[in-house]
Image (cartoon, rainbow, N blue to C red; front, side, top):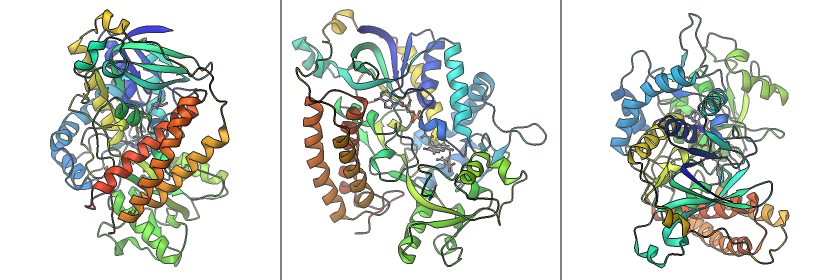
Length: 521
Ligand code: FAD
Ligand code: SIN
């Protein structure tokens, strides 16, 4: 099937939905794609701690200072200023007043603000300890209300460019432009040609290229890989952030223990019962995330253990009972037989957030015409070498809205003759059968390679090994992709290995340790 839209948004997390709502309200025809069966299944949905707003004694200058310090001053300064000046106002006007996100309230009925590591003000709005699903469900409901067309189980396979895909021989001489995307229906395996005047890439991060991650299974680096194939610039790919405290439990995987526990007093303990963070940073438990993750990693190596402990029970200083303030974490741990009101929580670092991505300007414009990128797939420069807690939802909101406003202001339709020159998707004539075991095996190799050689601590030798191994896998996977029956799994594997190659290439190239890129050679 061929169809035409003003704007196609790939991804239904905070960044994609904020862009889609704004574009729709500006009178554009918008289609949102989600490769998951439910459009709510996003990283956004699992956000715990909260989103930055404005604390009582706060200012844009103070927020900018915190973001720059966490990012080791390698951030793009204009982008940080923009986030700090426009972000908090948008939280109140867009999320609270317009969309109606039900953030937690204090005992007087006012919005409740919490604290997180490396913030100099209590400025974070939250909904208990599962802020993400409150935001995601409110955005989805509002998007539907204003008539945004949302298509689940629809996997974008590749971006369509004039240079790569057009049958018009003159197009390779023109500036590169994105003219739409090929989209697979996960249920039927058919591929549609969706032509658009603008594509907004909001496909999230890449946590699943690592053995241990806090991310849900959808985060496989699709956005970054698709943009790279389309010729867009990718930057800062070496900066992969590891969250210090993922739950270490034999039956519960991918479960984050929010930074806000440390904001509310929780302390880190080693197996000898020592509160060790003071040895690593004067800010102790409230040091930036990269510092805390490396300290835990070092203690694990020193003691020969696979996890450390986070003690909330004995140090909590919040007003509400733990089981109310941290309802989701308390109940999930209880299901695993762990009572966080009494017991220390076993934790380990895990891949959490991609600070790099598709290089964009202040409006989310990439280096390829008509292609915008927002949210975790993009690199606005806000995070520099390391992300400050709770800035990522804010960045998705600010750049989602700005990208849509910029598209609405441009309103530059692609002439029909140029869209007509785009061919439909071509399947291989006799494709090989789908083999889940091969895909599973390839994913394991990628994840282990990344965890061991491109993880929290990196060396030249390790990165060289990863580079060679990933090149070998990528070659085989590309061949397999060309010959096999198309599926979501195969699309993700192809993108995952490419995203891993991008991370390793930049990590090899950058010999300076900063933030979450840490080399010991
Ligand atoms: P996502 O929300 O990840 O959405 C990506 C979308 O793209 C999904 O709809 C997915 O299906 C779709 N997609 C991907 N590939 C394709 C494809 N090929 N075709 C079609 N669709 C595709 N940040 C904070 O600021 N505060 C927090 O408290 C916080 N807590 C977090 C807790 C956890 C456990 C995790 C994992 C992250 C947390 N973060 C937090 C980070 C934050 O949640 C994410 O960075 C942010 O939500 C990313 O939003 P996004 O819109 O860019 O992408
Ligand atoms: C958390 O709640 O610890 C996650 C916050 C974030 O990733 O910004």
